[in-house]
Amino acid sequence: MVEQEEAAAEAELPLESVGSRLRRAREEAGLSLPQLAAETRISVRQLTALETGDYSALSGRTYAIGFSRTYAKAVGLNDAEIAAAVRAELAEQAPAEPRRTIQTFEPGDPGRVPSVRLAWIAAALLLAAVVAGITFLPGVFAPGGSLPSILPADEPSPTMSAAPAAQPAPVPSGPVVFTALEPAVWVKFTDAAGNQLFQKELAQNESFTVPTDKGEVFLRTAKPNALGITIGGQAVTKIAEEQKTVASVPVSAAALLARGTAQALPTPQPSASAAAAPAARQPERRRTQRSSAPQAETVPSAAASSAPSVPAPAPAAPVPAPSAT
Image 1: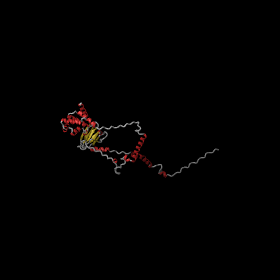
Image 2: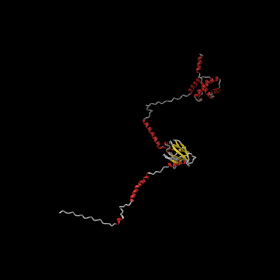
Image 3: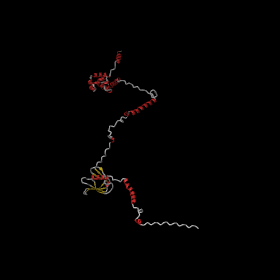
Image 4: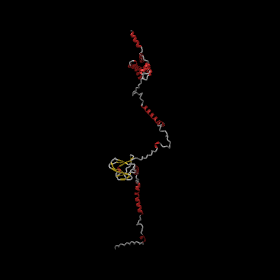
């Protein structure tokens, strides 16, 4: 009978909180809050919040559960059980979220579907508002269209400025190199005194660099069209474009550049109108010559003018025909 009363009294008592269990286990272990903080690396403030059940003082739900596990292990309690109890208390302390009421809509409900006439009226009003805004408030719909130009009236626009003048191509400079573009190209290089500097039948792609310490150098070859020339690595005009024998051709950089410039100059050609003018003037010149020539038949000779005029004989009278008797 007495045991039943004690069980009933214990049932009426409130359940012990997780914080009370942790504090009681700490006191039984003979640990103070600073000692437990040094052992668990949890601050005294956070340990106090766990013991008082003030989970809002912690950074969040995850920290509350993790700190409670570490606390339980340090004082000899079951960490899984303590963590489950903390989750339950957090669920009780969390405010109940209000349920969102879902509006039901039935397609056939005439009270919720606008009429066709009302939809057309709304569309017409919206269109009229847009047209009126564009007409009477253009600055709102196109703010950049009414802004004046910030440039003076006499100053040209940057987009209309003249394009920069083309820069002339740089004049090549450097060593002069002859390269055979075909197999078996015979060349001979001499100095100004006629002394031979180089003579050979060059193979294809074989090159010869003209020496710069021999003064002016001259070339003799039968295939000038098969020799590529570069000055400082930049290609220049060939000495000739057809196969022929050339001799005593100066091949210094200055001479080659001067030669290339002279060849690049266009030869003036007579225009079509100028060529047709002499042909057109030839018939006119011929006609002038004919008109200026003396006409013998129209000018009387001196003998004819001095001879006496002889009257022409009169015609004979007609003989009458004999009449019939």
